[in-house]
Length: 232
Image 1 (cartoon, rainbow, N blue to C red):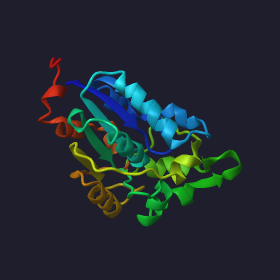
Image 2 (image 1 turned 180 degrees about the vertical axis):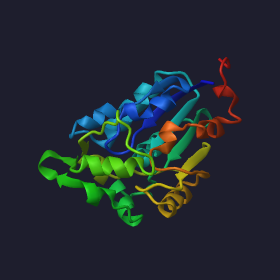
Image 3 (image 1 turned 90 degrees about the horizontal axis):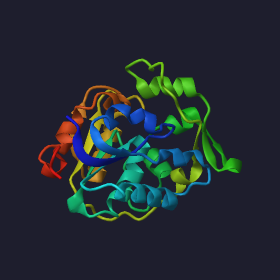
């Protein structure tokens, strides 16, 4: 079944729209603006404004998805929209506190992926992925890296270090916790889910598993009549 919601997805670091192909196939309308992150001068404000414009060109209701780092912009966009029109789902997502940057949240949850596989390229204003093969292995573990897997080489530094105010959310929120994740362990994910105030959906598998096996979407969209095919 394809859900009738308009879905926007925010990818984890070094991932882009292609990573969402299985999720995209489940929706009648889908948008992702993460190609913008190939520009090292991109800032959070411009990123969120472009995402909001792209989403509001589509009819409601709206499902906002944030995978890994993508949980941060998904959460920030959610607070700009009418809560009765949206649902938010974070997939192995990074939750930040008010006034906290993504870099500070990574440090607080003891996630080492940035320091293990990346370097700061301050002159270019970007974070560079320096060991793509090793990062891909950990990203997909415990499953093997698929042959079609592609990673971006850089992310804008501003997305890691900028912080924006957080407002309370009244919309339904879910957190897909991946028990076998080798990027963000289960305890750090549980802390992020609690910080976000989201309902937890636990599943076996690693960091990329929910982007391939998308049964959790049925739980996220359950009881949302506006999202049923033929509602409009």
